[in-house]
Length: 113
Length: 113
Image (spheres, rainbow over the protein chains, first blue to last red):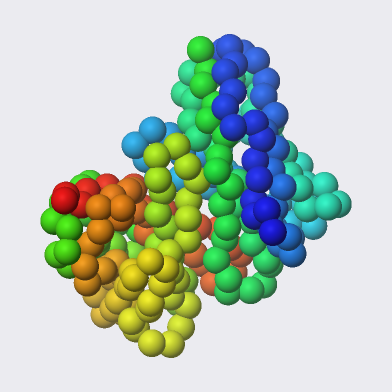
């Protein structure tokens, strides 16, 4: 079992550009959540996808959007990048309706210059 | 709204000594509580969880945590610290519905030889 995999691992973008991050959940998991972890902070919830729909959303602007595919993999898109979007973006997968823990990927380090 | 507080930015302990990393929480219903560990430039690794049952929860790598409902605390403990335990530790709470986690800001644990 490969666990949660994210790509790419590192990314450098220019202000105003758009970026897409990808996540494959752990085998058997149907729910994907995205978190933003700024330097020196705890992860902040962006949104969660289940059955290809956004089920819950944190306090992030509409520039942040996502998608979940039939195979449960997911994408995070950020438009009009700002310097403040520089962070580690973490994907977590879980099984809906269970009390089990979420499993995290290694993250994508996004740097906006 | 749910929240987590980790009052210590850093905890220093000598190898072989017991360690405690503190966490308090606020949630409207029954809490689902978690501890995760993060090594440099890596994602989050699950340590242990409390859902229901015994107040003392045992997890990975010799860690345990004590759930105290009256004090709304979930402190992480280990009887004998190792240098390799040095890392960033996050406490998180989940609401009883969807698997969205709210994290504390993290506590850096430094174990000296």
